[in-house]
Length: 309
Image (cartoon, rainbow, N blue to C red):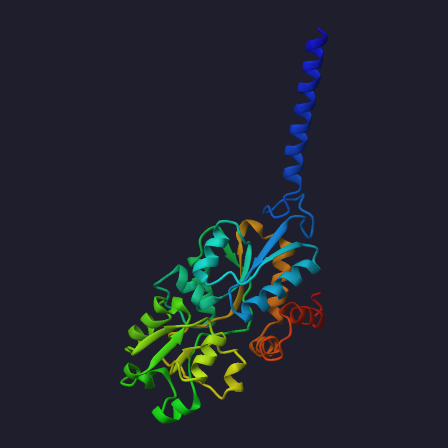
């Protein structure tokens, strides 16, 4: 009897501990959609990622700081790599949130995306996203891919737009991120939309120092550099116009795992988007790239100045 009572007591204790564990798991899930028991700021962790270029890192720091100001616990995984690397990271749960750009993201998920204007692209993007992902409100800030040349090259070849490269591109070397070789907005798009074939495509980086220096030093004749990059005015580079809209609208937008978004997170990130425009983003990026300030410090100053810290 004593043995049986001990066994019953142990069994009851285990059952109580198990029940308690299950109950606390449900109550402390801060990102369960519609969970009434979720704390306002959430007690779990949101992992914020970024691509491997300065603007993405800066935006990720801004998102992280805005969430922390609302009591959300944040982890960071910065400079992951290209879209081909970080989208799978979102889908397997390695990260939960990353800054993105509407046009290229829409084309990533829908190879037949047609819209080029800001609202049309955003609508098309929302329809193309997998069920597990969501985008929050887009900002007015826009940063497009661009084909950029030196002023000397523009003057010599009389270049004002990408279309002006027809009949000349076969003698030129194009530089850009490695993934531009296969992306629809890269080498294939330049061929399809503008009928351009280059003498060579040289894989460099995503609008970073390799691309900038390659253009300055003559290693490439044209390069993919983002339109907000302070190196463009600093080096008197020329951004070629895009009359056929190969590069659709590219508004900055938070891309997140849908299951991790609650009203607090949504509100914090939408408030950031409301304060970002292209000039603001360009100025912030110049502090990081030109003035060599730490991205987290620039992000903190932006959040404080806009009442988001």
